[in-house]
Length: 92
Image 1 (cartoon, helix red, strand yellow):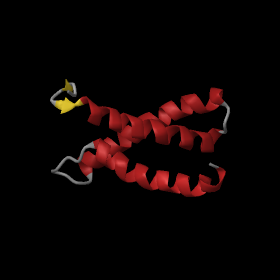
Image 2 (tube, helix red, strand yellow):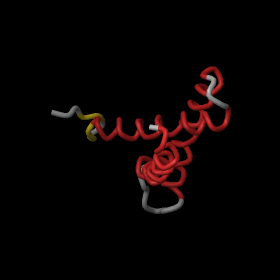
Image 3 (cartoon, rainbow, N blue to C red):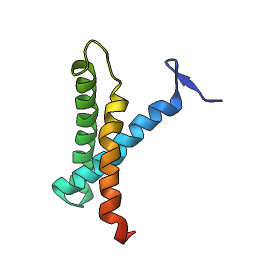
């Protein structure tokens, strides 16, 4: 049985966090290079920025209806991962 957190399944909360945590390191690596001492802090900032911008878009762009930030993140994250898969297809 799934645990509930604020009335929603815990799995949905983890899914949103996972998508953001998978996008941010790839974006950070492209900005500052592969060195961990530079890319990890930048990835943390990018991850927070992704959530902040997604929440802002979900609250203002579709007002008076609020769209959850996870949906906006998924709309951006899916094409990003398709791009990454197409780019690295030969290297896997």
